[in-house]
Image (cartoon, rainbow, N blue to C red; front, side, top):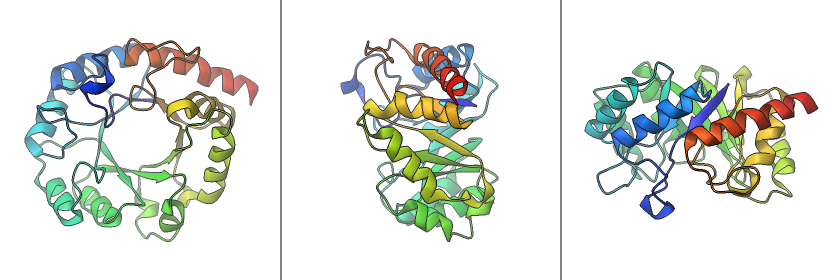
Length: 242
């Protein structure tokens, strides 16, 4: 599986190529799916371009995207979108249109409560386990762990020279990951080395403007679709090397 991570916490400061409005997100997702993405992760935005868990914004975004594609669509529940853990849970319970899945960063306060609220509503949980945090340790002892949809092994090391070793260390810290599927990805300069490693290890991965603005050769990406096309090629190359 190659998931497209459409925009992340980026804003218009990152350039016009990053989709922010529901219509721009729908257009970008449609292009990425046509290029081969089979799953979607996106961040709904307020009119001023900030991440939000607002039920009205979430509904407008999901409806616009689902008019264009038939693949699963997920959203973030990152603490930056709603810092208060109790309010984050309340937001999830107030959603009128539900995503297929939502990511929960396990090192953040209130992660298990947020995951439980999502599961109560029938929303799949992507357990975000970031390198450089205690997320893996907390996930290993979590009673919610066996119920998640998959684990997002998120390598936060942006150095292309060390990102692969950081990824291997993160995977080792996950152990059995409660037997759940693992999606491995990097960010910044570590994006492409980690994506190729995912291919070599036979793991799902993701690619998109959330994780990187550049193609493997260093050129600026023109769209999520271009990144997905390059990502599928690099992932396949990793599989061949594995």
